Amino acid sequence: MKHIEIIVPCYNEEACIRLLYDAVEKVFRENKDYRWSLLYVNDGSRDGTLAELKKLREAEPEHVEFISFARNFGKESAIYAGLENSRGDLVVLMDADLQHPPEMLPEMIKGIEEGFDCCGARRVSRKGEPILRSAFSRMFYGFINRVTDMELVQGGSDYRVMSRQMVNAMLQLSERERFTKGIMSWVGFETKWIPYENVKRAAGKSKWSFFGLVRYAANGFMAFATTPLRAVVWLGILIVAFSLAFAIWTVVDALRHPESIGSGYATIVILISFFSGVIITILGVIGEYMARIYVELKHRPIYIEKLNTIKQEKNEASES
Ligand code: UDP
Ligand code: MG
Image 1 (cartoon, rainbow, N blue to C red):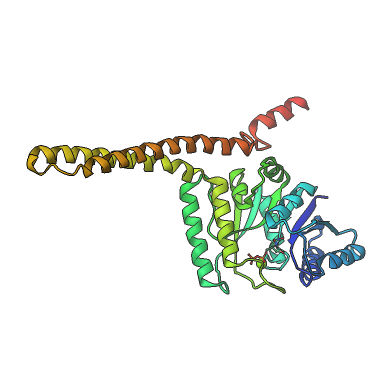
Image 2: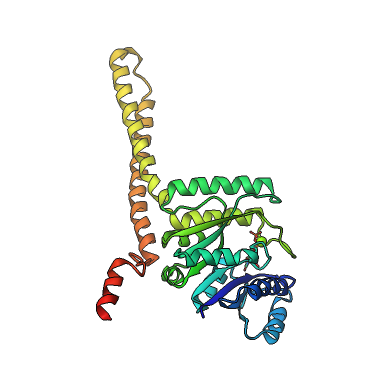
């Protein structure tokens, strides 16, 4: 029997631990094709989350495991810890607050059985969310899809069911500043999207402030884009071009009106803008190398293989 393992990052979710367990248990009571377990990751909660987890583990040792952090390291770290410690054939990422409806699981699992490596929930409405937040998030997706080589789907959540090979691929990206949505897109594989309506959190408060989200978005962008570093070169070249144009114009003007040659301010403007442009261009070149160093430092795999390709089938055939 296949094992499906559900990873749940938790930060101050004491009221949700049991609610989530009950909701998931209910789903699998009706679907007995899989062995299931929950892997809670307590991300340094300051409330009774850890006590709740211990209680739940005691009561349901067969279906509950947890990891606990020494302090709050953030959701991205909790997700990584969960993935790294997971052993399931199928791995699910799910929020603790029931905003990722467990009732969707059977349909999502079906997606994997159809041959997809990943099946995600896509929010089609942002009802009940602050307008500013929705607008900002829409802008972020539009922008990031344009300037980076990752493709994020509008409303695509990180509520996912993933195959083992996809999880292993994500773990191969060993960078420290992690942006899971980007990583899931970067590793490739086919994703099936299932639409759902926004749900209010079951209990407790959202951990995100507006500025927290801005920081998250900026982080996500910086993790995948080297565009800002590279754009500097163009700025420098632009300024040099401007100073050259201005120099030509000054010379032409001086030839046409020799009587007006005077203070020499034009020389100063030209010199300053020319050398500023040169300096910025050089900074841009340095930026270009830094961008490369940044990319190399991440030590991402050069490619990710998808199992069950034709080559593999041939190999298996020749083995048997
Ligand atoms: N979370 C976490 N560490 C944090 C912040 C959040 O593990 O530092 C968890 C949180 O417990 C929840 C999930 O991440 O299970 C999503 O958080 P939240 O519901 O606050 O975000 P929102 O749904 O508002 O985007
Ligand atoms: Mg939530």
